[in-house]
Amino acid sequence: MNLAQEFSQPEVQLGGIAPELLLVGVALIILVVDASFGRGDNRWYLAGLSALGLAGAAALAIMTWGDNELQLSNMIAADGLAAFSKVSLAAFGLLTVLLGRDYLARDKIEESEFYALVLFAVAGMMLMTAAADLIVMFLALETFSVSLYVLVAFRRASLASHESAMKYFLLGAFSSAFFLLGIALTYGAIGSTNLYGGADPVAEPGIANFITGTPTDDLSLLIVATGFLVIGLGFKIAAVPFHMWTPDAYQGAPSPITGFMAAGTKFAAFAALLRLFDASLFPLRSEWRPLLIVLAVATMIAGSVLAIVQEDLKRLLAYSSIAHAGFVLTGVIAANDRGVSGALFYLATYGVAVLGAFAVISLVAGRDEERVLLADHRGLFYEHPLLTTALTLFLLSLAGVPVTSGFVGKLVVFGAAVEAGYTWVVVVGVLTSAIAAFFYLKVMATMFLQERDPDAPALPVGRLASGVVAVAAVATIGFGLAWSPLINAAESATIFFQSPQEQSAPIPPGG
Amino acid sequence: MTEVAPSYFLVLAALLFSIGVVGALTRRNAIVIFMFIELMLNAVNLVFVTFSRMWGNLDGQVLVFFVLVVAAAEAVVGLAIILLITRRRESANVDDAHLLRW
Image (tube, rainbow over all chains, first blue to last red; front, side):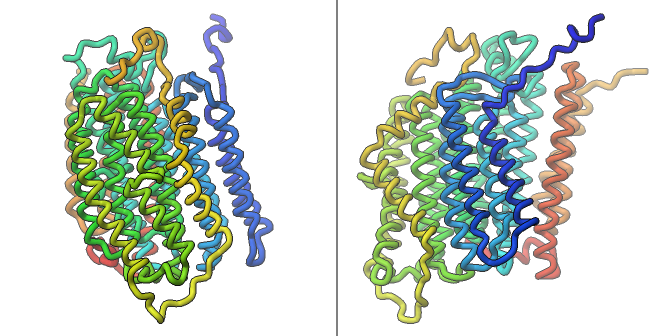
């Protein structure tokens, strides 16, 4: 027996995971540099290195633009969805790092671990969007979740921060057990955990080529598994009834991390959801659609209604982020090209707006985040007109008012759902947006119409943080007026990797 | 030697998983909740191994190692967070965590 023939060396292509590798490398370098040379108060090079790493990762992701293949034994998808998601996630990470630098310096808790953990988290999120195998998806999910557990607890002096980290951790671990059970049952149903499978369905089984080659009656175990996968991912996107951790984790975490969680975690989990449901499980859409519709409707209603009674601005935005998960879910339910590109556009623009909003909140909150209540924002306009205008802009975008990017995003996902024949879901979405507009307006009214508390301390506004606010504001307006470049980019991301059988039978528009 | 049918292992795994879910939802001590979550993960490991034998490939057994490593990493971070709170409050009871509500 010829050993060399028997053992064919697997082909190693690292193009698909180059951004993740770079980020992990830079994170390790940051830790080593800080341990070796990190002295003095002004360790600007930590944030500088992180920013360079994130920019490099974005560049590497852009270089894979237009690729459409599976790499590393069908484990990694190098396709449009991955490329678009990675660039967006790198941008979120960049804003978080720059904002975090000012925040940590103000609270005197700057540690190299913050930057390293943010980079690890971004790497995990990127891997999640590129995962073409459920076990890679699970590892990626845990990579960013574990990093975020620590980051949520980063305010050392604050017991609330630790409490929120504990709740986030316990519920996160609980949900990943369900996700894992879903993976195990998928493995039981099809004999592999791959999303697509190889060219030969028997030798290299995967969800997509299993469904096309099996009569519907034999799919019951896979459908049960799908239910558990929905629970696991539902926790991460904060869909009702799996949203309990969201307000607590968002309130206790440092504001830059709250923004990062709202933008990044949601993006990564939704990218995985889009790949799983709108590509691999697409032929089973009549089975999973009712489930997601129930989730979407409950999420939109509960998120919008519960936000009304919040007095804490971070909690209010947490409930608003829950409602937004419902809006994006309508795009997933539509399961057509416009739904997918619309969901991606929505997530990218929502992420920028919510990061900007939390940037303003972290500035107004002052040292140790003591001023985050709605009442603390009374008359803010008369002291900080620019900051207030920016926050107003972000809130208008979250509410979906025209001229902002949030309006375009809502228009696209709702349009896609109508196209797919789910008009009543869209009606619920529009009604809940109207409810949501109420509490955004309440915040604006507080800032513009009420008197400033004379005892309120002056706010030191850092240069980096104000830069982040400015960039986010320009992006929010810019994509609201000239949305076509980003929409076109998102549309190029809807060409998922398709196995040979699927390519012969293209997905019909409108589902 | 007689072969034990795989369904027995799956039933056992389902029982373990359910015990884990009920325990995690009803217990009040953070460490105990975490122990029940670990029980859920290990129930899933049993499912993986059983299906691995049914399919006759090794994928499932390899996945178990991934799960073990992830569970260990989670335990490190999770126990550190619980320890942080216990030091400040001298209790790991989740009902004492009352700073954040509604």
